[in-house]
Image 1 (tube, protein in one colour):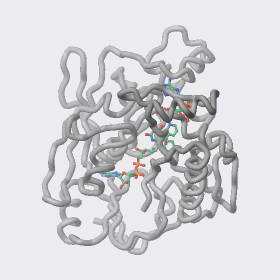
Image 2 (cartoon, helix red, strand yellow):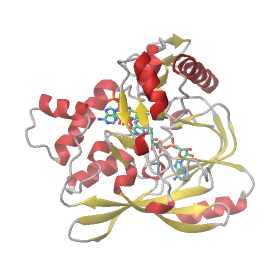
Image 3 (cartoon, protein in one colour):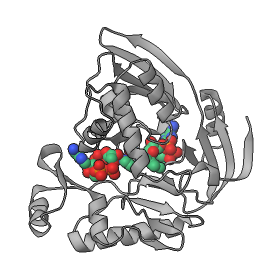
Image 4 (cartoon, protein in one colour):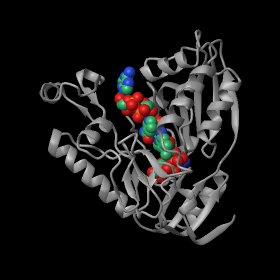
Length: 336
Ligand code: FAD
Ligand code: NAP
């Protein structure tokens, strides 16, 4: 097992923040994981996937466990579904493309999301009207407290809007080893988001397929979102806020152009990007920390910003949204 000391985490986070790990190890199987955890009980541990949803504000005085457990396996099928297990270290988008190439449907709207399979359940990744929970069957995770591997079904994970049991109630307790997905043999396409329909039209696609929907999503994302390879970012810095009817009604009276979408149990989802833009932050830059010029929900590192500078910018942005709209923005990004 190759253990590295005092390792730079710069290549391992999409914000490109310089932070150091006291110990760093790539975990490629369950036994390695158990060995480290048993030997190093009590030390700080950060479990890392692709590093695309994390902001380092300090060094890791302990262990970074880079989850590199690979493997994709079809475990069973029935008339309508195929059940596929992927190791935590598989790249998410490669897994999406692998499934599409076999005509397994359900993941197409989640194309081009950075990161790895193991982190996908953590915030129940979602895009264009589809969430991980819609294709989730079960996962296996190592429990750091009881030192055992458990299997979690759909009802055990408390999946919510960019949230799960693993991100809230039991943050940092479980280490996800693999995830099993239930994919459809006969596609049920979701083109409810206007941007997908418009892109399909642009592509002159009359009869959409999982391939064309995936391609449409890829095209939209490439045109709108900063590529972390070019400018450091972790996608949406905040979740879209979900508010009750009362607050929504008073806000829509004061701001008739405000975008809003019906959410669960009569609540309403607002577009955080729009709220931030209305506060004048779009394209803002101070030093190397900024708010992206096309999508205000994305904070960016133009070069050498520190995690603290990005964090402070996030606090200032959230503060002004609270002041102008009375709406609290919750961070989506995980802060270390
Ligand atoms: P990391 O950043 O490595 O980790 C994220 C969190 O999960 C950390 O707290 C980490 O400790 C924990 N973790 C990681 N692996 C494991 C594991 N095996 N077991 C237990 N805990 C673990 N997200 C969306 O939901 N929808 C989007 O459309 C989307 N678009 C994005 C676009 C861009 C340009 C970027 C940069 C990010 C985007 N994201 C999006 C956020 C991010 O891609 C997802 O949250 C992704 O699932 C993070 O995966 P990761 O492997 O990089 O996780
Ligand atoms: P957008 O299309 O400009 O829309 C702005 C917001 O409005 C989105 O965040 C979306 O909420 C909501 N929305 C738009 N149409 C909707 C509909 N028909 N029904 C319900 N809600 C609707 O958003 P965007 O920034 O380009 O992102 C497109 C998609 O990719 C979104 O689903 C977004 O979540 C996802 N994305 C996520 C990240 C991340 O890091 N989490 C980064 C980039 C993109 P939802 O966010 O709830 O879908």
